[in-house]
Amino acid sequence: MGFNCGIVGLPNVGKSTLFNALTATAAAQAANYPFCTIEPNIGRVAVPDARLYDIARIGKSANIVPTQLEFVDIAGLVRGASKGEGLGNQFLGNIREVDAVLHVLRCFEDENITHVESGIDPVRDQEVIETELMIADMESLEKRIEPMKKKAKSGDKDAIIQAHVMDVALEALRAGNPARTVQLKTDDEVKFFKQLQLLTAKPVLYVCNVLEGDAKSGNKYTERAAAMAKAQGAESVIICAAIEAEIAQLGSDAEKKEFLDSIGLDEPGLNRVIRAGYKLLDLITFFTVGPKEARAWTVRRGSKAPQAAGVIHTDFEKGFIRAETIDIKDFMTLGGELAAKEAGKMRQEGKDYTVKDGDLMLFRFNV
Image (tube, rainbow, N blue to C red; front, top):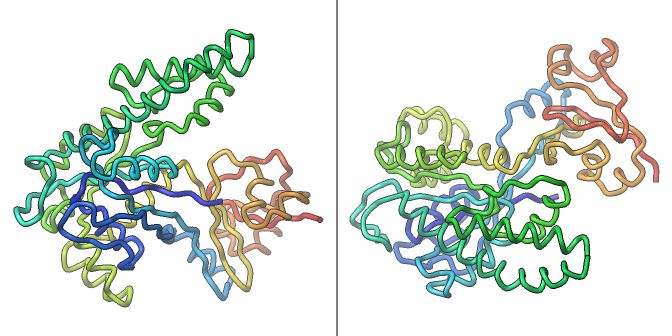
């Protein structure tokens, strides 16, 4: 089960620099001209989670395997993309494939780096991209709604619901609101809404890219971006992509810590971006632990035990019998699996159990 975040933004806001730092590779070419990223680049990065290392220490695990999140660096979009300007059609197709959007906003001034719009204004930049995505969504719905309404007139129950959902989404978009603001009433409406694959239905995290001196406290531009995000019910993160790129080139954790201490930062900004992306997708982590390895696994919040088992192997889900589960606090407080079991803290959970963040799980199954 893979989850991914698409990194989007206007050209030259720092998308590829951020992506390179995230993946610690030079796969995405960063250069001072628009459209240097032609094909979407994909990288998988570990999700920072100190609990995994505590579990591994207690369980005396030989290896540690963190869970991962996928990031996609998508070509820059410009005004008019919905009409094919720049790499518009390609951009729209690539963004349709991701689960969530990390929107990089330029919050720094640098006369040596070209901006495709005049002046620095993160709110305007956000509106440029949001508008293009809303136009694309409207055009997509307008092509599909009339045939669906005709089908609904025949009495087809699914078509009736789908036509209604399309109407509600179009009404929101025409009023200047992204599709993610649409309020749905039933499970069927939610199901059909997801099938529409609207670009503006995707959750968004705003990543404010600043110069080194503003990496800790931000600036007037990040304040505007944060206010905009709050008004939307979204979140924003401040990061200096140039700092992150430099950290990515350092060899050891000790070197990275020394560098962070020298500039007054507690941790890489990328850690905050990754955690925020994880939260944005509404993901949780469960763990497995043994002498060979301690491992973190990802599922969506609300997943049942068999679904979690299936993340490890499809046979685990097909032949699921039960899950032997320990709360992570009990595991760490009592000092491991055996002690937790002896204290009566290991639970036997069935198919209806909803997995909780931090659960340690051992699955019993047959095939």
